[in-house]
Image: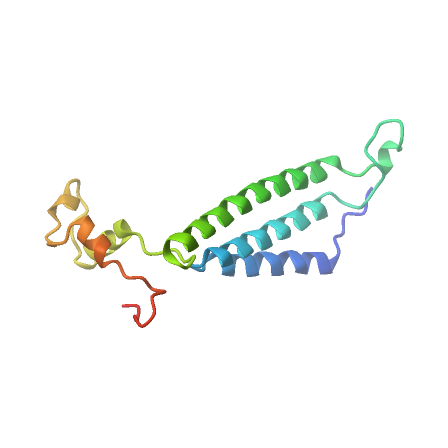
Length: 159
């Protein structure tokens, strides 16, 4: 039987990485979201490494005895996760850079549709089909877009 007891420090590292990652993922700044995503990814990679059991020999038939081989599935899953993380990191970096070019910051603004739904919910409007068109507000979507607040603008307080 193989030793399947994980190191306490690695388990704590997984918990710390995932906890900090989730906290950062809930921020509005794309840079913090990116760091949070990378932390979660590293935490999950350590978790996958722990799930592979103890270290062993190369999993090549004929080189290592079968009972001394490392689990290649965990290593394969970690390599796949690294590739996926790299791709998503590049995508988020591109979005943050584009946001920086267009707005001078990388924060995600409120969605106009979310605001409209929140306003309808605040008025306790019925949620039947077609109720979205019964919006009594005089503002069109374009008007709302022009009034959309920029939370990062200087001198403006978020409402």
